[in-house]
Image 1 (cartoon, one colour):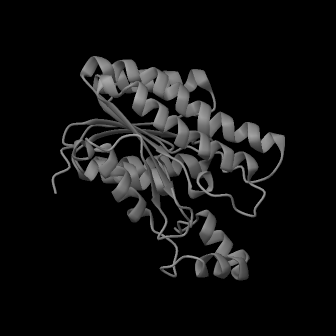
Image 2: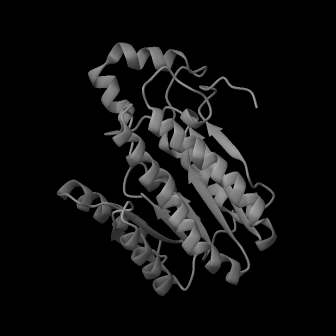
Length: 258
């Protein structure tokens, strides 16, 4: 299936590793121009940015990769201005950044709201006028099944932030539908990849890992590619009549009915 992403100008916020990286590479594979940023504050972060930039350039499209602290409103604004200067506009925005603050403290709440929610709102506020001027666009917000269904864990801020992203996508879809701007959320379940959260849990706490895995009807964790495939489709013009949705990508892990 041709997803009609050839030449589309795409931005992935939080794109150097994991789900964000997989989405960025998926967009590039479909012929899109891809801009991405991530914190890049240490050697590991800078190396990750360098590696994903090299991987993106293999596809022969325009690439714009920069370090950026997405919790810093001015830095985020400057990054997006740089994308507009490099690409001439933005057709697709994917917000994947997360504080992954999984504790119960107020500090965890604040971190989640700043990076998961407010960074998304700031980015959307900046690029939506550009999308309107171009005749439309697509926004994909990476939430979580934690925003759909409460777990026994102490991740109050994280779960609340992901629920807020799901609601925000719905609100954007209604308000900006007349502008031909679509907005959707995805809700990944437990996704395992090298160096990721569930890879660490598998090594450090095998009983907990096995308990979670056993609760997934397919009997395994999800993969990055399985998440990216859905996100890239939602971003594409082939998903034109899908807006305001939250799509779980969890192999049946969450049990809620909506």
